[in-house]
Amino acid sequence: MPSLPNDRKKVQVPDLAVWKAEGRRMTMITAYDVTFARLVDEAGIDMILVGDSVGMVVQGTSNTIPVDLEEMAYHVRCVARANTKALVIGDLPFGSYQISPEQGVESSIVLMKNGAQCIKLEGGVHMADTIAAITRVDIPVIGHIGLTPQSVHRMGGFRVQGRTEGFEAGGRERILEDAHAVEQSGASAIVIEGVPMELAQEITQKVSIPTIGIGAGINCDGQVLVLHDVLGLCDSKYRFAKHYADLRTSTVEATQAFISDVRSGAFPDDAHSFH
Ligand code: KIV
Image 1 (cartoon, rainbow, N blue to C red):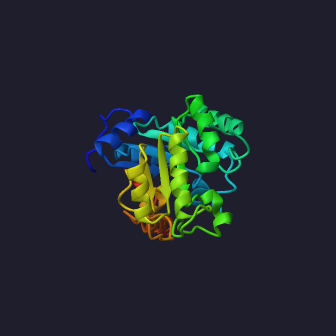
Image 2: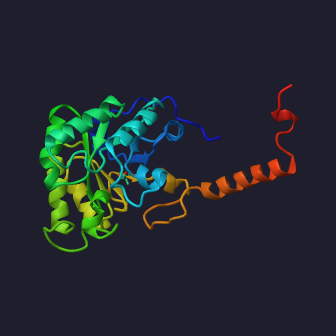
């Protein structure tokens, strides 16, 4: 068992600005339940994102669009019960903030009441008023720009953004504008997903708030990955997602060993039975 940094202090939103100033690289990983939240916290992760990726890795949806606010509130509650040292971020799902800034504030309040310390939402220029409204009531916001999964249909799939010049959605200059809009609206950090590493580096140098990359290269202030990718639980292999374990194989093998023991009569043995 590796040594666990359990004595660390609770991560708070203002720590992110301090860490950017210090040049300390930040770590974020997703979790959706208490068991994994406890484990990634014990490992020393800085931030746990209760992401709407729960749709794809837990619920079996093909994108994040179907996930709703009640489901996110439930998963935020599960993760918050782990009572972690990590900062807990609740992800606003599609349809819970796009209608108006007021709707964004109301939905953020739901996630905060369920244990989030901060919320994340997708979008830049068009979400500026919403981010400003949420931060105005003292709910910290993390923005999300570049490949924004809730825009899957506009993008025509999960495609790298910012490879073309221009101010149209997905264009390089537009993503730079999005980054500035998120920063100026009062967000505490920005997730940058699926953009060329040179663009992510330029954003990281130009904005004062931390950038957390996923598929955005080494030069962001921090990195985020989906837990199921890190653990190798899914059979899909994305270029940007490194598998640090092969729990898919371990899970199949452990289940096969159980099936075999039951069928052969080897389980339960005396050590696993009561007298
Ligand atoms: O929902 C999620 O897991 C995310 C990350 C991919 C950043 O938004």
